[in-house]
Length: 427
Ligand code: HH2
Image (cartoon, rainbow, N blue to C red):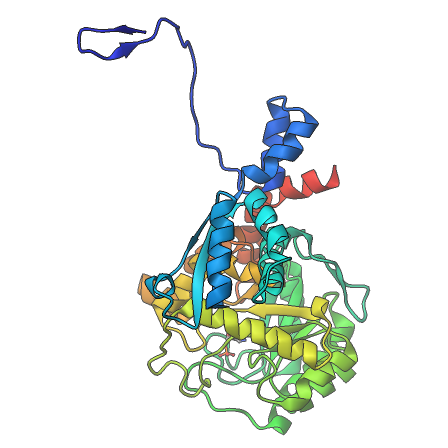
């Protein structure tokens, strides 16, 4: 090595065209593909792919002794585990921690946790499930619906759920489709625009709204559902928290129940969904529609919604609902400030670790109005941005009013984001 006049090393070797570029390969399959492309041997690909994917996992509620051993194991295998100072001082009973490592390091840590004390084998299972669910989002098992030959293949595309509110007072389309003929005509139009599912609601849940008596909701919803099941060629979902409404809708042939209460309000709803073996959407809400927008507060919005949804899944399973029938929804606008809603969308992919398909309903909601300073009839572009970014974060269903526009947004986003993965899976 020679030195130039400034004392810097000067190589004799002409490096020609060497160029460096950071590549965006955040899963093992894409990394393996890239390695094959540059000619790495199959054995090399198998060995190296898990080394090239890094994951950060947040664990909550870990008992102190388990946390200390887990940190040691992560460090021993070349990873890292961040814990609060209190843990280093042995001053806490339980702690949150952030694990950092490659998939290979996790594999080695998990293997060794299985023979350790302090609940570490069970904790290993929790970590493994979260890692696998996060990476398997495009490979959910197909969900066969009860009639009409419909199957939902989550991962293959973004499903568009068209909103049909048969209410006098919904925040955006209230009063337009109360008449069953008009409701059915609107549903047909939504299907023509490309809706994959029609979601019929008979009770507005806009901020400040009061509950509607069950008979009133039945009178609004059931005549429409009866006709839609016969007259439109897509699955029908019913947006209700009441088992009385859901029972009548399921008897009429509805395919999906969309429950904004996540089976908390009506004790009969969970077992009904289980009995009919239909998919159910479990949504997060803080408070009740009447007062949910009065000072919503979270210490950690993502963590609290995650825990709520995790418990909701457990409650549904305990009531006999099959895991494959559960869809989760962080509940945009339900007891959340604009900032909360934006953070949920920014970090939507974190809910993938729950291992279930994700629905979001951002359509025309007031946080879009707050960001853009626009009234409800001018929020279509804002909605489009939320839909595209939610798809990029791995959402499976978007619940929207502007079906024609959002079908185009979703198809474009799917072409960018999903095609490659699907093609690779088919090979
Ligand atoms: N949002 C609304 C109603 N139902 N269901 C799910 N799963 N997710 C949502 O985000 C969601 C929902 C509110 O929107 P909309 O139906 O248009 O209004 P209103 O409640 O006033 O009828």
